[in-house]
Length: 239
Ligand code: 5GP
Image 1 (cartoon, rainbow, N blue to C red):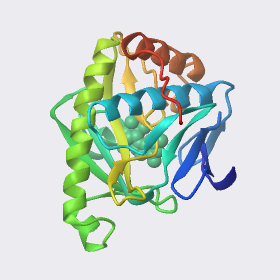
Image 2 (cartoon, rainbow, N blue to C red; image 1 turned 90 degrees about the horizontal axis):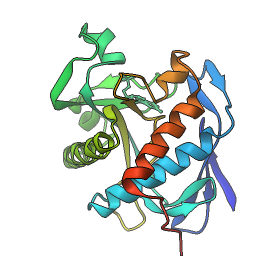
Image 3 (cartoon, protein in one colour; image 1 turned 30 degrees about the vertical axis):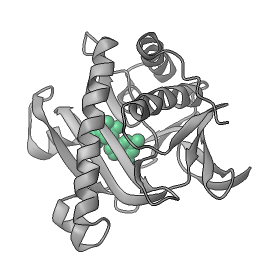
């Protein structure tokens, strides 16, 4: 397969005109790439968790780029990603706490949706809906659809995590157009892109690495083990 793109935590290979293979690396970065590590087993865990969660969301009618699981990653539809990150927050923590002076751990009911402009150079700044439409990063209609899908996906995932004794604190989504012109949920869904707390408020996500809270592979392994108990093993392979 031809390497099309290499990012901080993934490699994207072309399979054919319409499909890619998303391979997860062990690399983990934080603070705009200033903090880096490569813990063995992290890529495999994020690949498995992403596959499980995409497969679950697809089964519940959320359009996604996911096709099927492979070795160390998954097959997906080739997408043109829109430069907007949608973050849904169920609990206040992370950047919003600093930005708005909220109390960490405050429940956000109903969930709060925020948008960020995807730009490494600018450090993914917070933007509002008007910026997105004005600068044509997405149309009003696309934005409405992304918001609706993000809220629906979060509701579904929140319940899955709750069944696994875990709390989905916040989560980041990316969307793109597949070769048939459908707007689909893309990128990955893993502890790299969301925050997850256990019954005791222990972080089992990338904050473990960001804040030096312990062994990230062990934390992701715990999430995977618990999700497998609830959802089973992702078995749908590309055929
Ligand atoms: P915050 O805005 O509090 O830093 O992040 C909110 C949520 O979105 C967290 O779960 C965080 O992991 C995720 N998130 C936001 N931006 C990015 C990003 O550029 N990359 C990754 N991997 N996750 C992000």
